[in-house]
Image 1 (cartoon, helix red, strand yellow):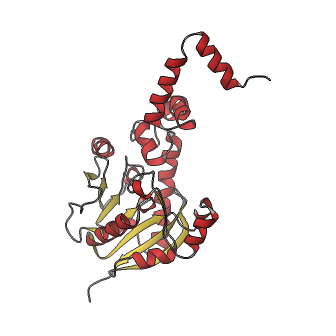
Image 2 (cartoon, rainbow, N blue to C red):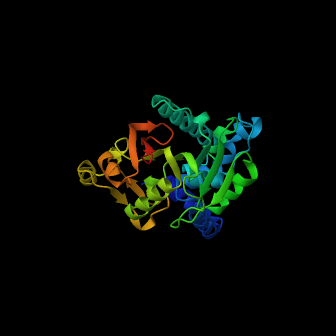
Image 3 (cartoon, rainbow, N blue to C red):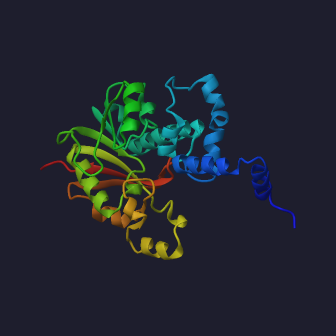
Amino acid sequence: MKSTLKEQIKSILKTLRLYRLAVFAYCKLETIYGKGKNILQYLYSPFLNYHYTRRGVPDGLPFPPVKLVYLVTNTYRYDWFYKSGSLGQQSIRDILQKNNFDINKFETIMDFGCGCGRMMRQWKKMNGPRLFGTDYNPFLIAWCQKHLPFAEFIVNSPSEPLSYPNKAFEFIYVISVFSHLAEGKGNFWIKELSRVLKPGGLIYMTVMGTARVAYLSLELQEQFNAGHLVVIGGEYSGSNACAAFHPESYVRKMLPENLKVLDFVPGGAKDAYQDVFLLQKKRIA
């Protein structure tokens, strides 16, 4: 029986007395960058990103280190980081326009879970609104503070109220954040976001829902279709290791009384392939 390529490489490394070193290096990379194809993608990233590093970026802004890009997109590729941001901002504009809102007319906008500016960089040329970004990862925020000076950034706690005052923002967008929150944290954050939203203000929120239900097992699909929140890896709530799937009916029930659904667009977030809820805070009578 012919040996596999893997066995051949293993044999060569042992002959050269490099096998233990190779195993150690692989385990180290796996710890830092993930398994299998993620390691290879990281090692190939200088070649994959050569076009952008040689010619620059269309928006004139620098790219974050690939390790930060991976944290927010699960890829080391600059092309998808940039393209997905463009798709995301267009999805926001389209759904706002559909509901007769113009993003340029908001006075204050917050990017909740801003990461390393995948979306925020899209607003560089927008005049008028004051831009704010927040994330629990201090390394992502530090990069944004240094390289995206047209917006203000702060670090937030994963489970404590934001430092912003009540009614601070007219528009908040939350992309693929609730997708990684178990029920308790999800309920906490939707209430907290409604606190810092002005009466009449809007929240653009994406969730893994109808557009992603096919990824679930048949048993979990039944739970989802029955209107139950489906959480995988709930013990890791708040990180990418947690995946939460939100049925439309569940989201409508979880909302605080002061928030109403203006629009629901299955698969409306083209960058994240997620469902979109456009929420509005009720005005006090």
